[in-house]
Length: 193
Image (cartoon, rainbow, N blue to C red):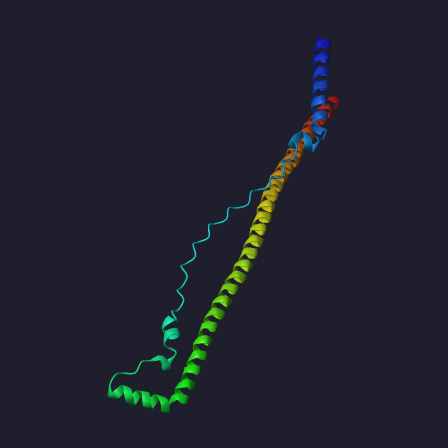
């Protein structure tokens, strides 16, 4: 019976040593963690639909001014008043001609100013549309980069958590293995006493 006991004790010691050996052997992180997850490239966020532009303001109607600038074309009344008006018109012809010339130039200036303002406003709108378009594209690029960085950061944190868990579990396994070896050593020392 003593041989059976020693054989069983030797078998138990051999099993204990192999378990202890496996507990003290470090494992490779790739074996525990697996391959790192691929970095995902997120899709760009959808752009919002631009609101419909408001209807254009109507241009001022200059037809009345354009039609009435020539005071010399006004028809004189009939009768005695008409004769007096024609006489007065001949006397006042230089003043009326000067007024007609001034009115003509004023109407031309008003029409040119309206065309100039319309062209300037249109150019300003085109410029602002270009600036806002470039700004919008720049912001979309920034959003894409932020999403990519966010995904990479999340993947990195997950990988870090796995690594921390691995280190803690390996440390616990090593501690348990060492405690077991210490108990066994104490038991052997007490047997020899």
